[in-house]
Image 1: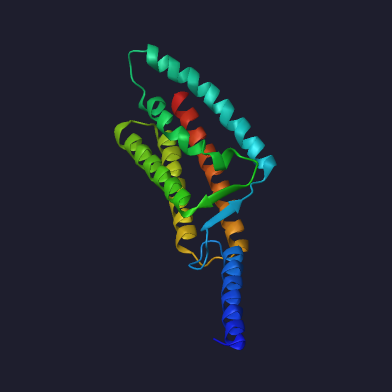
Image 2: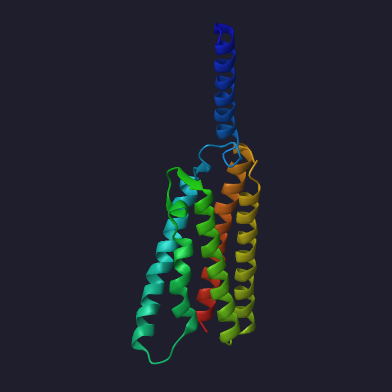
Length: 193
């Protein structure tokens, strides 16, 4: 092999490696990406407010759960909420630091969302809520369905640019926070009756 042929091969390999690195950076979930993950950085002010709201809710909820354990009647709303809380306590929702989210992470998030939807649907089917409570529960279920769609959109848009992913993950983060607020309203209304 001559020097000219070696230089051409080395140049082509170098060009290919450069192409892969560029694609990995600009299109994190693309076919060419080496590590299919995106580093999401949430707004720390938003996270602080969310963590505060979540902690206040959990504090109130733990009292309700303790009452449920000592009471002879079973309140399904209070009981099932313990299975819904992990959806809103995910690390990537509570962290102010950048969090890497891979396709496997998205699969896990989607699974949690689907399980939450099933739990809410069981509540709808098994509990006799008043009209206003039922409306809030149905709104929570609709919001959960929207979450599923957002996650699927991110997963299937593998050639999305870093800029698009930033917008999509920011929107998904906001949707989770809104879902929590909607569920919190439903929970409080169902407890106050």
